[in-house]
Image (cartoon, rainbow, N blue to C red):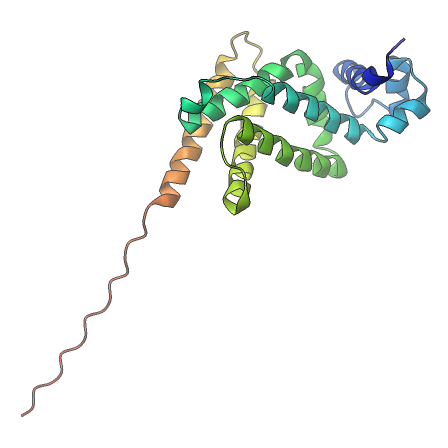
Length: 207
């Protein structure tokens, strides 16, 4: 018997197991209810859609990342902090890689689900910036969230195909993408060359 407080996570776990075996597109809410051994009405009361289940799983990963406290993190350069936090995220995703692969593949074919995933990604990147002690507020924070999201999605594709135990390919790709992003930021901060004012024409001498 599943405790009432554990039902949401129990449903998510059942959904991930099914996604890993039969794919996400072919998994129905009725299948998830059966796998969780719960009435469909109870599952729908908690998660009215599969997108809601994915959002809940994403929040679980967010929480797993931010709950890790590293007192030495703040002393590191920004790029190293972001590297540490994003790799922490991949570590949390690791046990669910087959399910994540299926969800990413099938979500890309569903425009509505892709929109929901994009919204969840923005929130996740805000949490990742916070965990890395990087300001995510205001217009500059919005740019940082979008930039980090682009880096993360790029490296996620590498991670999904990286079956090594040490995630060497993933770490190399993440380091490369963060360096590229850092170089781009530095380039954008370069002072613009001052526009040279045209010299005034000499007035003709009085004859």
